[in-house]
Length: 184
Image 1 (cartoon, rainbow, N blue to C red):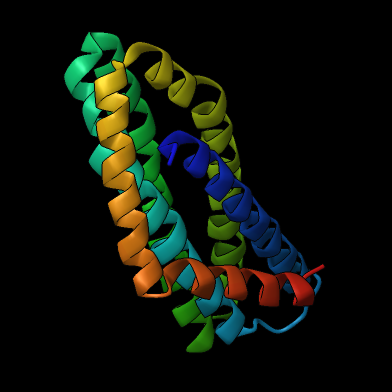
Image 2 (cartoon, rainbow, N blue to C red):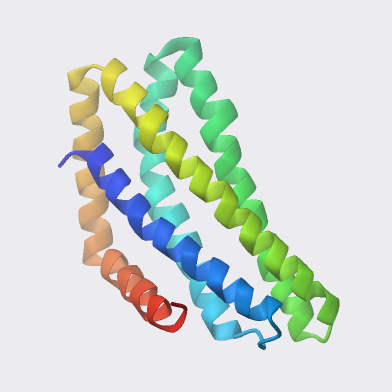
């Protein structure tokens, strides 16, 4: 298994969900009532597929090795770039969830916060993914030794198999397809 190719492939699923989130926000902006169940599914996908599953592999395996073996450039690229953006994305999703709860409890004005946090997340992640695909992954694959890349690949393969045994990949692809059908 080539873990970097797999992560690039996962980015495609994440970007598809970002389009769903944006379309759901557009409907809210146009006056449609918030579908809390759908937003809950979007948040579930983001937290458990994009963050826990995908970012989990990046943070535990690839980024860790880049920080350890690629000197100041690798460390700064990961620590002050990618990890900061992962944390900012988590903040947007936490704030989105808080805003949804406020709207649910009658604070109509918090629809602004629903839209702003969700759309900010989509903008952040689209740019973040583009940087990873075109800069970070390329830099890591060119500069880490073959042995380290192989170790990352092996760890990722175990991680993927454990997730597959739990049905993670299939569950979140199914959620994505369901929501794409609704938010075309």
